[in-house]
Length: 103
Image 1 (cartoon, one colour):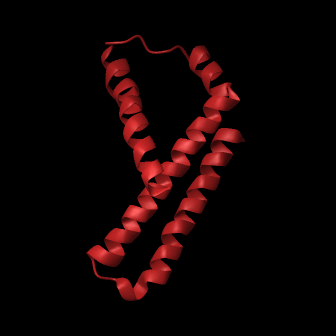
Image 2 (tube, rainbow, N blue to C red):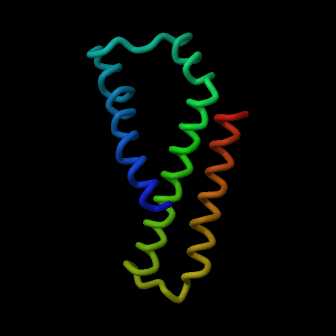
């Protein structure tokens, strides 16, 4: 799950940032109108793909953050609570993303 989250994030997030953060605001590309974007986001497959992106990115973050705290900062004696908090954050974020996207 760690590598899947890293790969999906590395492939999709830069494209979304480039489109919605640079090209559309600068007028290089014509931004989609509200109705077109709403229709795209209304499609169940798009919502499921966005949910998958969110969940996999959160799993990648949790593993990387846990590894940094436990091995990088030498907090190995707190491995259990750190893991529990990191993966509880993934669960909470995944539930929140599912409520927003599928609700």
